[in-house]
Image (cartoon, rainbow, N blue to C red; front, top):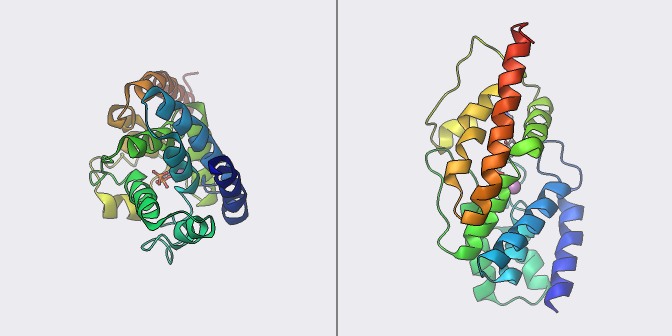
Length: 214
Ligand code: ADP
Ligand code: NI
């Protein structure tokens, strides 16, 4: 039964997210799902709830679906279609609502399942995959890769972060380098350390190359 729901959720996100070019495509949600399940296993969290919240975490994302964002209409419609009770629906929606990075307004989920989903989503924003997604996102918005004359804006709140049109290298300073210290679980932090070190080396090389020093 639960396995069937997970498989149906994969089909649902494929139809809804497909090939979004801005870094929220189906493959992102599938990676978050795989990582979240691994974290849930090490943290003794409820694997089904973690898996379901991970698969559904972007189906009402404010950037992609501003009209369903508030009531989590897509997530609720899917869960209702699978016969999931309302209490569980509320639990999953409250996890989804806390996952996203919101600058200084970011929240720490109050359940271990939520912590695993948030960590998995953040791990997918860093490391080599993070570099790839950042440039894909920047390209999809027509942003510059780098502008040495524009300094990064630190300590942005949610509204400032959402309104920001930062170039991609600045995004590393404004978000991606901060994520490792915001991870909730020990298991995620071990992966985060390595991925963050890799990204820092990448950005250092990138800037040296633009200066003609490499
Ligand atoms: P979340 O998954 O926490 O909701 P976002 O929706 O803000 O995060 O970001 C989705 C993806 O797009 C992430 O990989 C993120 O790093 C990337 N991204 C967001 N803003 C920018 C930006 N200004 N430049 C480059 N990449 C960005
Ligand atoms: Ni995500």
